[in-house]
Length: 161
Image 1 (tube, rainbow, N blue to C red):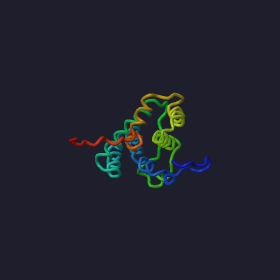
Image 2: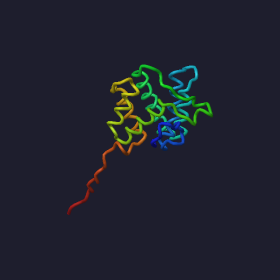
Image 3: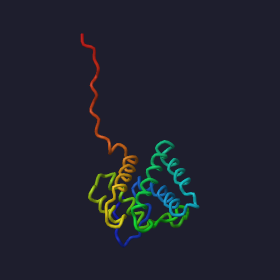
Image 4: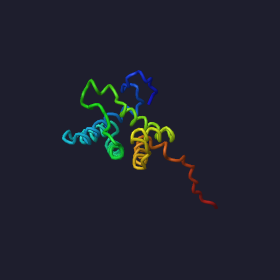
């Protein structure tokens, strides 16, 4: 995520590409958790597969819903989010949406201290293991090359005569 001034209303176009793609999926899952009658989980999975393809999209959608579930279970109050189906509201971000996306961005960039600070704000003061574990899982799926160690060149098999 790009840095924003505190007096500036956060807007979706200020996000990096990964956060911008993740935002509507998160919003649909939040809708599903907080208002189950919307069946937002269906739209969340559909949005993810439309963005990243079937195999990767389903994995990302599953990681998003698992991460949000962990945050919601370890948070004293519900998350504030904008309705993903409201055309006017989808351009803006709530402070909770900014925090969630900043957390995933910090985890993707391996900024541990910053990530811990955000988790503490999201969960009311403590760093919960479930939030860390599910957030890292999502960050890894979003940026799979960052979590894998560099491969060493494999030895070549040769016949010696």
